[in-house]
Image (cartoon, rainbow, N blue to C red):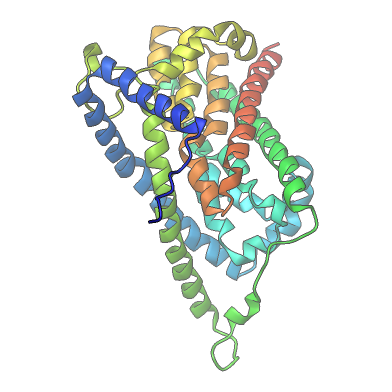
Length: 383
C-alpha cells in the first residue's frame, strides 16, 4: 500500500502563521473581534464602491481613448515630438507621455489602458514595460491632489500655489528616480535591444475584402474595442486595490468619532503612524515636518492618496502644518498615489508579477526622494 507523501514543513510556514495571527490578535484586542471583522468587510465594500469601481470606469474611458488615439496616429506623433524629453529624463519613449498625462488627470492604473494597446506597445522595448507601473504611479491623481491643495485657501486664507508647484516638482523628481531604478534592474533581465512583440496593425484597418475601412467605422470600432479592453483591465486591478488597501487602511487609521470603535469602514489601529513617530529623529531632517503627526499623511497615502490629503485640513485648522509641510505632502502623496494598493494588480496586469517587489522597492525610494526634494526646493524658493 502506497503511503501518502507529506509536504515538508518550511520555516516560512511558521513565519507566515506568526504574522497572520499577530495581525488579527493585535487588531482584535484593540478593536474587538466583532468590530475587527465588521470594519474589514465595510472597508472592503467602501473601497469597491468608491475606489475600485471608479478606477474601473476610468479604465474603460482611458482604454477607449487609447484605442482612438492609436488608431489615428496621435501616439506615433507624440512619440516623435516628445522622445527628446522623455528619453533623457525617464529613459522611456515619447509615446509614454500620453500615459503620463492621463494618469495625472485620473489615477495611476489608467496607464495600463495604454500598455494593453498594440500601437502603444510597439514603441517600447521589453525592459521598459514593467517601468510603466512606476512612471504611471508617480503622476497618478496629480490633478486631483493639486486642486485639493489649492483649495486649502478657504481654510486659512493663505495661497498654497507655491506649495503645490514645489510639490509637483518634487513628485517629478521622485518619479524619475523610481523609474530609472526600475529600468536599471529590468535591463539586466531583458537586455536593451528587444522590442515588444507587435502584430501587423495595418491589417485591422481593412475589411474582409482587403479594402480600407472608412474613418467613421475605424473610430467607433477602436472606441468600443478599447472600452471592452478597459472592462477587463478594471476588473483585473480590483482585487489588488480592495485587499491591499484594506490592510493598509486598517493599519493607518484609528477609532471612529469619540475614540470608539463601531465597526464602520476606515477604522483600525494606527500602527504605521506609530512607527513613523518612532522614526521622527530621521524624518524631521529629511522632510522638515512641523509635527510628528505629519507622518500620517504620507503613510496613509501609501494606501490611498486621497485619504492622505483628506487628513491635511484638520492639521491646518490645528496649526500643526506649514506651507513647507503642504509642499512635502503634495510631493509624497502624488508620487506614492496609493501604490501599495495598486502596484500588485498593475504588475500582474502587465504580466510581470515576479517584479512586484522590485517595483515597490524602487517606488518607495522614489517617494522618499520626492519628499526630500520638495523640502529643500521649498527652502530654496523661500530664500
